[in-house]
Amino acid sequence: MTFSYLDEEAPGPPVLALHGHWMNALDFEGLAAALAQKWRVIALDQRSFGETDASRDHQIDAYVSDVAAMLDHIGITSAVPMIGHSFGGVVAYHMAARMPERVSRTVIVDIGTSLDEEGEFTRSWAGVFPLKEKLEERIGARLSPYLQNLIHRVEDGWRLNFEIEEYLLSVEALNGNHEHTWLSSHCPALVVKGADSPLSDRKELKAMALERPETSYIEIAGGHSVHIDAPDAFAAAVEEFLDRET
Image (tube, rainbow, N blue to C red; front, side, top):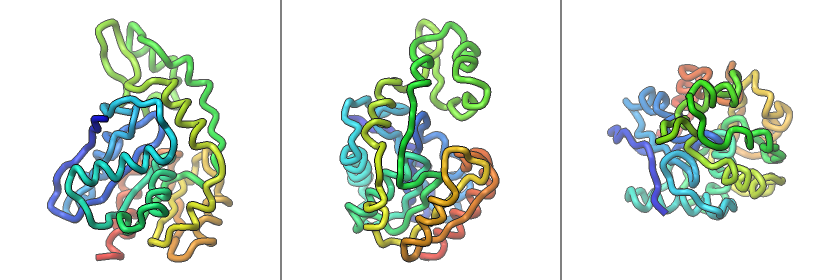
């Protein structure tokens, strides 16, 4: 499998960022720029998203193996901080539990441990649209701004740079209860809730922090993609948390 990733090659120590469903590595460009004086942000296009190859295997083991393979490719063998938004957060805390020698701390963004995502409504987004505006209209005014990095031009029009069926396979594979895995890791963690997000449960995310040692909880004004809605506040919170280990 061929992977695509964002790496601005800043001079600081590396930080790995993992995007959520429907998104890709480019969503972390702003964070990479904001942290560039201290940290080298590397963001992976996870399998079947962005420019990384598609795959029918969307079990959590595959995602964790992808992260390890990318770090090996870059030559990073020491433990690094990991930032995971939405399903990327699930990958991050599974990585921390399964390969603790590779994860120094985690930032888990607007995702809990009990997953019950329903994505059937996205089937209408599949295919090629004659105009970009037609695809954006199909996605809807609320969501289309967050998918701009995955809307691209093809020979016959415009389409999303991922297959809806691949996304639905990922949803099916990841739905369930991941609490045991979350509690099995021991590195410092920060749980971030988008204060206005309808996709995360405040009580659950607070409990994640309360039930696990060395874990803190914050809320930032914004929706589910709080790193996009409130980039300055998000970058400041992440930088403060990362600086605790330096």
